[in-house]
Amino acid sequence: MTDPSYDEITDDCYAALKERAEGDKEKPGECKEVKEDDYTAMVMSIVADDPGWIDENGDVDQNEILKDAIETP
Image (cartoon, rainbow, N blue to C red; front, side, top):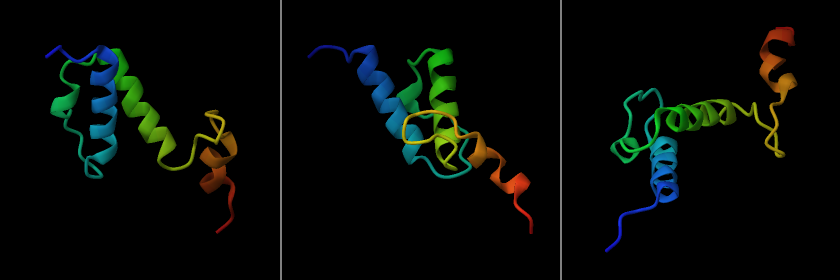
């Protein structure tokens, strides 16, 4: 059996990050071999995508980010 590729490791890490409970800040075990910069990028991607800040093209939707600030109560 061969060791998993780095791509497979990052795929497993990303899946584990998506599945962890809301508010959980622990680094999943699946991510232990992921480079810190890559791990940070994955976390930020999930944080930005979750509230809808990333549009269907993968671009940051500034209007969505500012929506709560500019809407009147």
